[in-house]
Length: 273
Ligand code: AMP
Image (cartoon, rainbow, N blue to C red; front, side, top):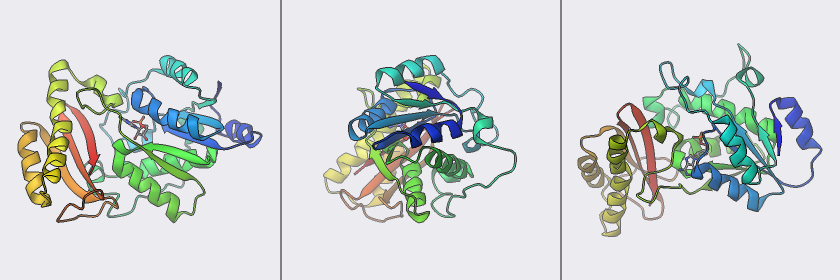
């Protein structure tokens, strides 16, 4: 496995390679969710590139940028074992200068839900993804459905900016008890981890209600909110797959999303129903 930190060097190296390139951008502290993206990339492409970069521009002031988990050495081993060909490991100064062009998330979709509680977060996400896609020029790029709004915005950006990359959405990987894997789960105490299970079980509750024929969005949201008590709910929402608000669930065309704060940790989850 080649490890490259300089964007130009990576660009030049990849120019010399033949075949399709699958790209998996991450912020490191790799878990089975990331590994699932890598496996998908491995089976569908000749060359697999993974990036590990904790992107400062997507963190708001006062967020966990400084204490975001970093596991550089074990991440390198995981990439090697998973058959990654190139690990892109840039420093902040390799990726950003002081004053530069930024990508701005669209007004509505970029500032609702996660974008409402973290205004500007998606500008940082789209900016770094644009940079990474331009450096790697992959055939396919892999993103988790776990971050559904991010996936939706990246898909929009690629389409609206006429970029030539196929965005592949990968299912959320969960612990056996339902908790969605996240690098931020390491912040949870044992007690908080138990409380956090309410997030995934509220999604299963919604899914069961829908299977029983309940389609009224407000009714499902009310039951979910009750189920989530006493967690601090940031949002409970049911949208169509284009992230538009709906009054009634359309089966196999909707997403149920939850964000809640457990202790001081912000946890996101969703289910495509
Ligand atoms: P992150 O390192 O948290 O920025 O995530 C990098 C990529 O992994 C993103 O596309 C995430 O959506 C995806 N990802 C994170 N958690 C999971 C999970 N539990 N299952 C599948 N993909 C995930």
